[in-house]
Length: 193
Image 1 (cartoon, one colour):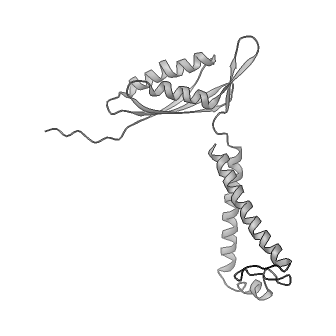
Image 2 (image 1 turned 30 degrees about the horizontal axis):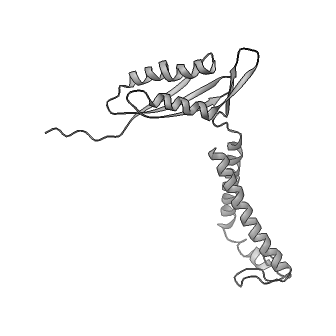
Image 3 (image 1 turned 180 degrees about the vertical axis):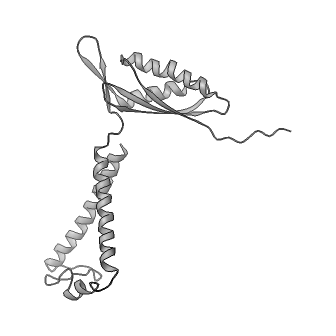
């Protein structure tokens, strides 16, 4: 979900910049009024003059800086491209209905049910669940925020025996592997007088 939102914002900003610059260049090209600070004011203007193109050519730092900036741009573009293919959270889980057909359970709905079930256990302040893997064989990543008095072993046993067991039996999955991360709520030590 975050990647999709980031893509929309990035494409929207790129579109706005291209639209503004393109519109201003078109306005200048047709001889329409453009602001005084705009570098091109008429159809005869060029993007870079010959003197501007040759200005930095003899400087020793120029080409390493150009190559470094272009390298960073290429690396950022590659990272964004690779992120498009990374599988995020599971969108749906296939449930065998027993009659040869399969039903679809939305992944976020199953995550919320698991979170509510895990958070209802004694000693758990908050639970966060994300489903990953294939829709026929999901895996769960569970983060539990434990109260100061909670015993991690009991919290983990309750997660396995209750929340994960309920999710597994209700969806008819043969197994639901889970990775659990437990963390305690930050609290101040009690003052004894």
